[in-house]
Length: 167
Image (cartoon, rainbow, N blue to C red; front, side):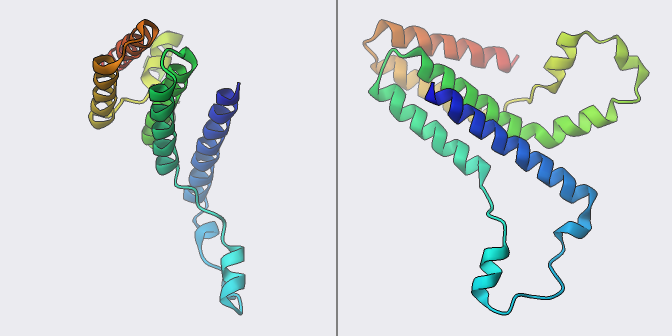
């Protein structure tokens, strides 16, 4: 569906941004400005790489998801897309922390006994309380105004998923 492609694009942007920022940290000379400045302002603008504000892009995607869920109640795909966006937001917020955890744990022999499940859970970013609070308010608003049984079921399932994240 179109949502799979949107999710793929968002995930690719986040991955590329994380890779680019880690390359810049490892090679600080790349981030220095060129020694010979362009002759005119237009040339300077064209040589800059476009900056993508990922948090803002994800916020817009949440707003889009909210509008769709309100306009088309009872569609599970919309709730799954919202769940994916929420996951990506918190993956983005915790990417530097989780990278540091993985690097720090490479030579630690005591961690080799962990199961795959423990490793997966450890890499999962901890959701921030503000984002969770906003999502719970959204669910409360949907449940208080919905007349669609399926919509209530999907909202409740989404709430249950959010609760499992915070445990």
